Length: 470
Image (cartoon, rainbow, N blue to C red; front, side):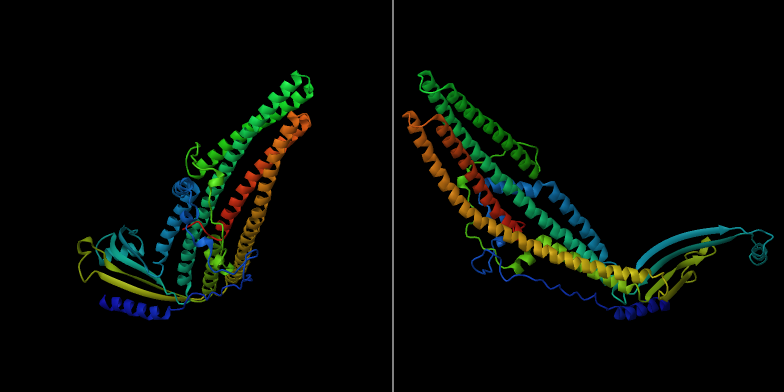
């Protein structure tokens, strides 16, 4: 028995020295990246995405919402469970290089026919008509990783685990951005509601003045009808805005994993602050930072290991099996040591020859899948660069739009005052007053929308650069 054990150990050490083939080499795909992003003044290596979300979003109420979202959002929790599941597979993959060991105990009694050869032999030599067999043994099976198949299998498990980790980071960036976008949209709706209520007061005053002029005979009933319609239109807008606010509050509540409810906010849109001097950094740094791009690269690394496995399957495999324990044909001396000890070792080399082209097909398909993943990785990088460029151009354009919209609001507010003075003096009709009020209302609503779009473009840029998961 000792010789058998020593033989197993020696044979295993010898094969272990052979099974040192490394995993299949990985060649990183060439990427056609621009040196800098469009719409950036300088090639600054710093990036706003390096800021943690708590530094980027300074509003305490928004920070509270984001913290709740990271903690309670169900999509994020599902992703974390997937990470835990992949982690278990990764732990198991670390043991693939070790042998399978089992233990079994069996007892058998068989009684052959008395007229059979076995029956006659038993009766002649043992003086009984049945035979017993009692066995207790350890069984060992091990495949030598000569061609790196097991190493590549472990690499596949590792890449799958890292993919789930990067996917979790990607979901967190999306959750953080979605909460911020929803919050800023809520502030915009608050501002628009405030504008509408202020305009309703103007419409009420205009209607009151028109009614007085109609009663004094200085205008027609049509003027009263138009002023009334203007007031009703503003009241309808207020109702619609209140509805949109409630829906947005519900959506934000669901994002943070809570039942639909009111969302507390203590500031107005004018009080919001985000980094204004935004640096996008370099495209190459963005590629290494964005979780979704990193995830796609890990898919490529996984497919590279799958090619290694498919190649290894075409080469000979060396398997060793061994078993040893105690065996006896009598139960009373079953565990009599060393008389009942037994053991055996078997090593086998198997070379696949004809498998109906299955192995070659598997290898070719694995290579094609790797090529597809190279293309998918390049596409993900291209999409990422495009998203950053879109956010940059939107931010620059919205700066100008906000300035123009602000000037337009100031002009139209002065126009309302002029129209009202002229109307009171009989030098303008009611249509001019109503038109001035309507234009001013629309301009103020548009300004609030432009400000919200500007905030959204900054959040989009932060997310597109890979920020928000730290």
